[in-house]
Length: 290
Length: 290
Image 1 (tube, rainbow over the protein chains, first blue to last red):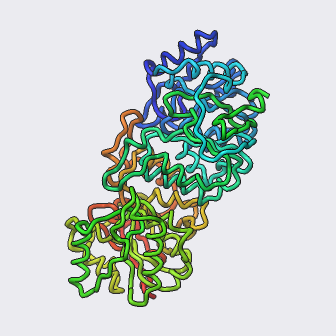
Image 2 (cartoon, rainbow over the protein chains, first blue to last red; image 1 turned 135 degrees about the horizontal axis):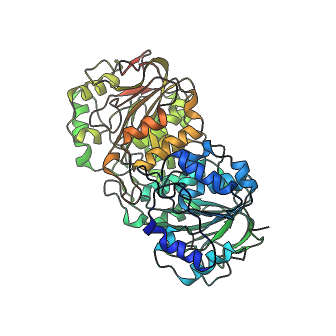
Image 3 (cartoon, one colour; image 1 turned 30 degrees about the vertical axis):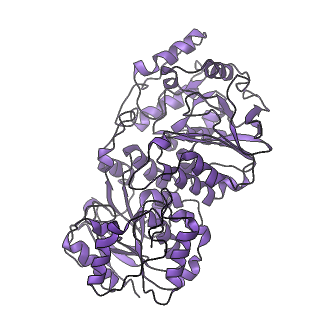
């Protein structure tokens, strides 16, 4: 189903084939290809597709076609408690971060993982391995993926949360706000201007949210270094992350493969994990299907 | 002084000449032309320039050179109570919205008005008239400016607040958050993608901030209609504003000349005003220098 921006049959064809090749049956939501500007149909269409997928006993799990924008508009229309109680796997990232936060808060572990559109581009074999492992209830981090880079060493344990940075800040001061206390917080984004990456991280800092985090896992700010606005000027995104997050006294890594990076792990949110910031690795301490 | 992004002597030359032509003496802050990527010097340089301008008895008012980004980074370094107690006129918009919110909260009326860079481009005579009126303690809205367009009619009275949309949302959940209760809230922005305008307005709605506003004055989303991301899709910005704000049951106008529009009024924040949404006009009920 498409909770956010529009997609096309061609865009998700390879993703569907990947799932069907593993023996999954794929059922397309009624409005999966609907389009109204930047939205995949009206809020009523998208929310009804999502709610029905969680309610329908024939549906074992819900995979988003893509992100873009639109999930935040759905919240007034959804029965999130009912959705969370279903216990179904829910899969996506980027704009879908908003739904992860709302479902995790209600006790459902969800999957920060590739969407159907993600597979329209070639990915490393470990990306597929991690994705299929998570879908089948295995440990999705036991694959041959690159490690992150240490920004501040140490080991932390906590429940995983986070996702796409601008959606994390979009949640602040709302009923489904990002909660960082004692948690390992994942942060990544795409196509943000350098000064906006600074503004978004500064917003997280000013809100006090990050002060109580157990650890921080940054992916990358994909495309940011190519988006210098000559009227404003730029820093490389790594400098911005180090400047803003380097003084938090918690284990922190960057360039960990998540989200909008060229290759990405599939990671359960709402489950306990261990961050070894010296090794640049996350390890799951719980099964996402517990 | 430059609280945010870098500027150059050439960019602010016309603005300085305008002030000097009116008999004002212009004193440039020590680091006004400093540059470090998107910042006009380090946080220490910018905050020290700002604090000193408020402390120095020789300085009657503080005019920002330009916005861009950087004001939010200054807050930990500033004695905002001391600045607010000075009673000095403080002039800017765009990124400076962050400082307006912090100063208004502490009882200082501030000026949402052109900066030195603004005058590097030709503006209508009423833009100059409004700016000079505000500087000299006159009513800056009694000029021959265009009216706004009625989105929801009616009349509202309340203290003026608001500014650049992405800075308003950047304030949510921070100690200097936007407060809308009983107030007339001004909203405008520049160079935002259409779906981000929706996301930012949806963030304000989800936070509950707008529910208690007395009235809403939207400028425009300058440049948004030229920024359709073909990967996501677009709505015209006026449709987004009408969709998101049209159902709030308060007097609301759009296209009111403020902020990043081609021509803009100079408006005091933190003072009481009347919004006549049928006529598309604001009227000041208090002097900004009271």
